[in-house]
Length: 306
Length: 263
Image: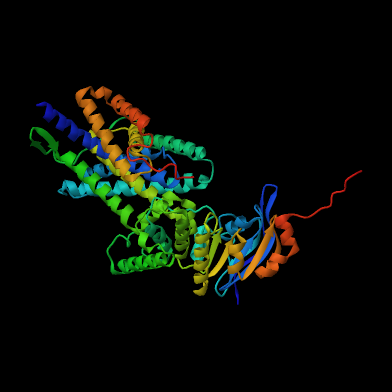
């Protein structure tokens, strides 16, 4: 492998991980945008998505469904199913845990979010066990050599799924009525309510979308690594949160960029230093970047929020 | 003229402070009513109770073109749906959005396309979108901002931000517009333009209820003026009479007292 090929290979690997980070980071950033809450339970919603997808994959391969369904159909159904489940769970968490204390001091909501994270993590452990679960992968092991760089069908699926979702989100936020209401709510919730915008519904929708994106990230994570464990959500959540901060928390394109940058840094760190040092490398870059750009890469207007 | 807004025996306390004390007033259809009073008299608290930002401790707010409905206990967005919108003492625009988008947000409640249908290119949704765009542009023309519709709202000079906020409040076609100190921070020319705008809206039949400190603004445009002092209504009537009312003068200037000097 020439140095250039090695570089490109690490780039491809990093991009795959980065796409998953970006999907999770979007939920952090959107929820922070509308109610200024760091939803610490978000990493667990990612795991819920992974486990629901696992359940659906197992059902479809061992269950009563006719065999011979194309792999992409199985994935589509599993993906949509886990997005729907996590979306509903996210909305329920917002409705019953966060909404009653929305006007309380911010620290209360933060502690509630941490509590919710523990609750979900332990619920997953009770439901699915504490050991690693094998995640069967319906995607064929097709691989291509492009100029000495190996690209798998798995990677293409990750890129396509996350790319489609992100483009869709961008369209939704920038050019629909709902998206406009979401942006307005993020800027001034009270003024929005006084214009007649049903802000509670907008916030609930934000939780649905954010949680559904995390769930898709969870399924892709399971497919990519082949095993999942109930506490995987902790580190992935932390990394995705880091990505959101890296891009500028509250900023949607920022979360996408932050996720991809973090994934690339990890990929390159793993390739050139050691894969055991990839987390150190990623977090070190974060610390250095925030020293010089405290608002993240695509800095959010924090000062506007008086 | 029938009443559009009725405030009856409204009371609101903040701890030991009685911000509104048994206030009763009404605004009739087509009227422009000024609400004045010294700082801390409870003017903004009254607006907050009417728009649902605060719950009154006692009393009722009723509103309606025709049959009156109680607004007490409704959420702010429901009250806005009923047809009351407002501006703020410190302008609260969506500063990171364009001038046009700020006004479009206000049309949200007058279009019906839901979450799914607004994403599908249906004829109905497109018609509504065109309607909202036309309405927003019409309002921007009215306040003189049509040429700057694509600028960021936060980048506008302060005087224009105030006008944009009025356009945004008008975008849902309210029956009652509440203006909280619309002239604060404006220069003489901007105040003049604001007066013209309010006159123009009045000509279109809009009912306006405004808080204002500047007597040169509130006196010429108000049909009636209500005066609050320490949460109580102390006077009400045509601007001229209110201005000469000794209790009002006292509230603004204080009483004259004779000081006895001991020899």
